[in-house]
Amino acid sequence: MQFGWLTLAMSPSPDEDGTRIDQIVAQACEAERLGFSDVWLTEHYFTGESVYCDSLLFAAALAMKTEKVRLGFAVVQTPFHHPVRLAVQLALLDNLSKGRIDVGIGKGTAYNEYEFVGHGLRSTDSRERMEEAVDILQRAWREAPLDYDGRFHKLHVPAIRPKPVQQPGPPLWRSVISPGSFRECGRLGLPILTARLPVERIKERWASYAAGIDEGGHDEKTRATLLAKSALWRNVYVAESDAEAEDRLAELLVETRAHMMHVRVAHNPPDFEPDPAALNAWTDPKVPDSEAVPFVLRTGSLYGSAKRVREQVAELRDVGVQHLLCQTGFGAMNHQQNLASMRRFGEQVMPAFT
Image 1 (cartoon, helix red, strand yellow):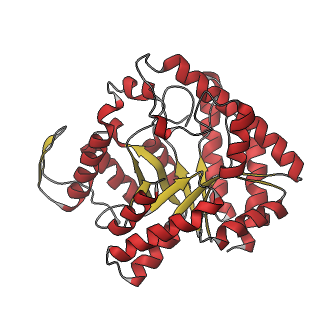
Image 2: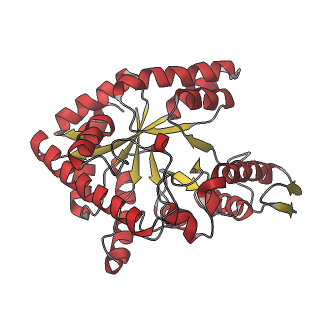
């Protein structure tokens, strides 16, 4: 199996932002030392979540601090970026990292409308903006000059310099949930990210993806590569005992959810309501913590002693997961707690599967 490390860390106050950013750099470097194959960055704004906010600029710092680990984005919120600027930044990052960039693509948060408002946008056309941005990205890396006449952008680009190291460009990943999305990404030959998928659903979703790959006419090498890359995101907390891990992780999740719900009430415009289809027990404010936290522990978390977590990882391996993204920090969890859990996972869990 392949193990990635993902950060969605929060800074509890502006006074701590600088310290927290330094700590995430240290955590990413520790992830490389422990043998994680990839580091994934999230993108959120204005409230201390993803405290570095600008994941592209932050990735440039990590490219200079690391040597082997791949640097991924889970995900770039494309409506917040001019696509030509994004193409240039990603090409530069690919050069700085010597070809270590993976780019998850998204249409923007389904819950934090204030992030759109803060960028002078609303989310109503976010999917169309994402699709146009992806088209421009892919063409800008291949075509010189590029003439583009779209709904949001009318462009004449002489050339993107420098060209990406990875040709025709850094891999563009998709975040998927529904069976149809798995199948469609398979047909298109796109690597995928998914989160909070119950174990009993994983095998059928991976089968949908494999069927799509076959329908797309991709060769066996491509099929094997895509299935090996396909990434499942899990909360991971490894403690000295099962009880300690469950108690502490539950506390951290309650704190995280309180912050998440507070900022949405405080900053989302009054005319915004999230799509009901996007809500689940964790994201629906009507669901109490007493139901939301067990839901996340059951469907999106690996936790316990190293022995128990090894058993949980083996269960995922046995249903087809070859690439696991581990989020080891939650809310305002302190740096030493995060490192301790990372080290237990890296030294006592990962060796059983690599």
